[in-house]
Length: 111
Length: 114
Image (tube, rainbow over all chains, first blue to last red; front, side):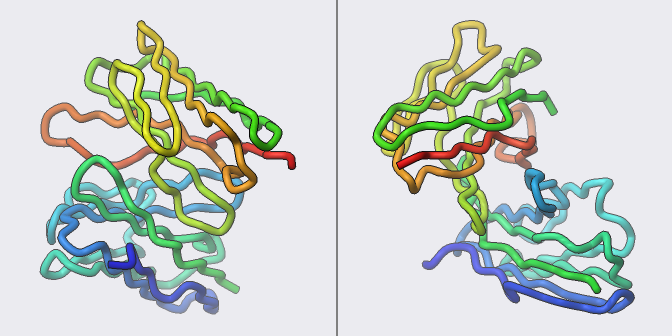
């Protein structure tokens, strides 16, 4: 297993377009997290899945954001009607025990 | 979530020990102390965690004050590859939120000089 995989690594989109990111966690990891990170800041929690159930969502996650984890495997994060303020690094992490393993992230630029 | 306070930045020379402090005066009895680090252009990676006793692993040591209101991450011999942002995070394991989300602060930027 090569770790948490995120796709794409980079995405440039025009304001108002929809974008979708994918995260493939480490096999058998039942917990999956999405974070957002802007320059110079620590990652901010967005949402958490245990298996296929979305158990927690941050207030940062407006109604333009939606995340899914069908069948408790990979996860997708969709942003509708993107805004310039959505430009950030979107990080996915998975865990089974104490340690969380992070992917390298998807860098979104909204122009 | 309980809050942690870390210096914005620290510097070290290669092959010298580094002590990264963290204050968490409002820590609760069920909070574990976790440390993650983030190398440039990478996602965060786990370093170490502990509850009350000092902990050692291949990457670092964690020294926890007796009252648990502060802790120190110790890198015994800094290398250039240790240059990163180091985050001290409290994680509640009470009830059904075991191994839940990590709440990151701004962390400490560690610069290692050759």
